[in-house]
Structures are given as structure tokens and as C-alpha cells.
Length: 340
Ligand SMILES: Cc1cc2nc3c(=O)[nH]c(=O)nc-3n(C[C@H](O)[C@H](O)[C@H](O)COP(=O)(O)O)c2cc1C
Figure 1 (tube, rainbow, N blue to C red):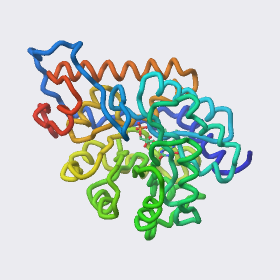
Figure 2: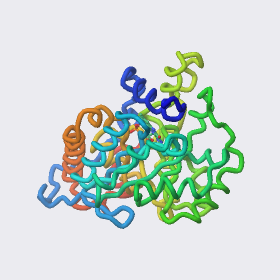
Figure 3: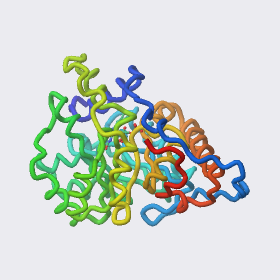
Figure 4: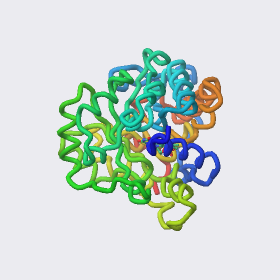
């Protein structure tokens, strides 16, 4: 129980709860305005929000982004509530880093989620930098297998590792290793950041190494600079709390790669309107993490309520844009009134 990886995840949950300013609340999405239609010329009831992801049908383009797992009751409860709600509403869900599986085998109880989500998309998660610290394809395959996952998220978190006193900071030669490992796995790999973003240079590097799924996980929502700062009694100062590339800027930058790669938008998406903006900027799916945390601590019903609210907002946005299907939204810049 005293394993540092296991305890760190609990500390993160505690700090996020204690300091609401960790959420930058999607302020970069506010700069975009959409082209309202007074005459949408469609029936609200005809708006179809469904979409396909990893060969499965989702009720609307949402993935609950990676947050937690571990050998404690709290992450177990959170993941069970998230998975049950994801199944009920037919959205996708990703678990938090599964590194803890290898230091604390009982953590498997927090990742054994197919029983709660037999049909929807579930994604595994591992920190890419671990490949420079002894992890290999067998660790990644195990993360996939315990979850019976549809894909594996490999996360990139250089800021977090650099601030953490116990951080793993050797990112040298990583993309090559990531590509070699990914080619040996039974499921596709999605590369994500954790709130600082994957920009054009990194996306191109990933594409050149064979990756075709990117979750930009940009700045604007959860600030890892803040989390690690509070975790250490603010001893590193506030210099990195707003570090990172804003999520809408990333989506604009990655547009030229959109025809070759599947782009997932996340980092500061807080409403169904934000989701629509992200998709107009080229994303085919949207991820949201922190806003689900408190609901997931309470019950699956609270999570379902939050998902339904997002879906309603997303549906009304499509209606007000005069759009009846998700494909008409993706990359359709004519729906933007103002692009900063
Ligand atoms: C409490 C918490 C724990 C997280 N743990 C992980 C993790 O283990 N692995 C990961 O890839 N991302 C992790 N993230 C990052 C999220 O998946 C997401 O990329 C980031 O929070 C931005 O989304 P948001 O602004 O909607 O929160 C975590 C986020 C939060 C809030």
C-alpha cells in the first residue's frame, strides 16, 4: 500500500478536489463564435449525434479521458462509476495510468471494467516515458488485456515528470521505442498529452513513425503545473501553471494532418458547445476528464447526468447550426463566425 505510484494517484485526486483553480475551465474556447441560424430548416428531432470510433458506435463523440486507477477503494469506485455510466450512455472511456499494475498487482480491481462496460469503447493507458525505464511491449499488452481494451493510450507528460521530485525525465529516443512497441501490440495506440498539448512538430514526428491517432490534450483545462505545484507545497513557484499550447490552437495547427490522422480534442473542453467548436476545427472525437471526477466519486447516476447534459448541449448546438449529422461538423469552418 505504500507504493509511490499507487499513492501518487490518490494525492492527485485529493489535490484536484482541494484546489478548484487547477481547472483553467476552457477559456480558450470562448474566443470562438459559431454561425447561428435563425432558420436552421431542420427538425431538432432529426439531429443525429452518433459517430463511429474504433469500429464501435458511440451515441455522441465523447470519451471520458484518462484519470485514475490503483489499489484503493476510491479509484476503484471512480472507475466503476465512469465505466457503468459510459456503457449506459454509449460513450467511450479511458482509464488512468496502469503503471501501478506492475508495482501493485491488486490494482487490477480498478481496471477490471469490462464487467461494467461490456459493449462500449474502453481504452488502456500507460506513460510512454516508461519505455525508457524498463517497460516494453509485454507491459503495454498486459495493460490492454486486463481491460480487454479497444486501444491503448500512451501518454506524454514531460512537464509533469520534470516538476515531480521523483519524475522520470529521460525522453531521449522515445518516439522510436514507442513505434517499435506499438507495432507489436494487438490493439491500436493513441498518443496523448496530459494538458500541455501535442503540436504540429510532434504530430508530424508521430505520423512519420506510423502513428495515426492523436489526442492533443492541450492547455485550457486541468493544469498539471498546478497539481504538482500544490503537491510539493508550491516550492517550484507558479512558473508553469499556464504552460502549454491551447487546445484550439493545436487543432488549427494540426488541420493539414487531419486527412491522414484521427485527431481527438481534449484539454479544457467543458460544454457541448466547446465540443462542436473542437470538431469544426477538425477533431473527430472530444475528451473530457476533470469535470467528471466529482460526479464519479458520488455515483454512476451523477456521471450519467453530466454526460446527458453535454449531449443535450451538443445536440442543440448542431440544431442551431442547421447540421443533422456529425460528419457535417468535422472540419466545416464555414460554421465559424469568428476565428481568432
Ligand atoms: C485527476 C486526474 C488524473 C489524471 N491522470 C492521468 C493519467 O493517469 N494518464 C493520462 O494519460 N492522463 C491523465 N490525466 C489527464 C487527462 O486525461 C486529460 O488529458 C487532462 O486532464 C486534460 O483534460 P481536462 O482539461 O478535461 O481535464 C489526469 C487528469 C486528472 C484531472
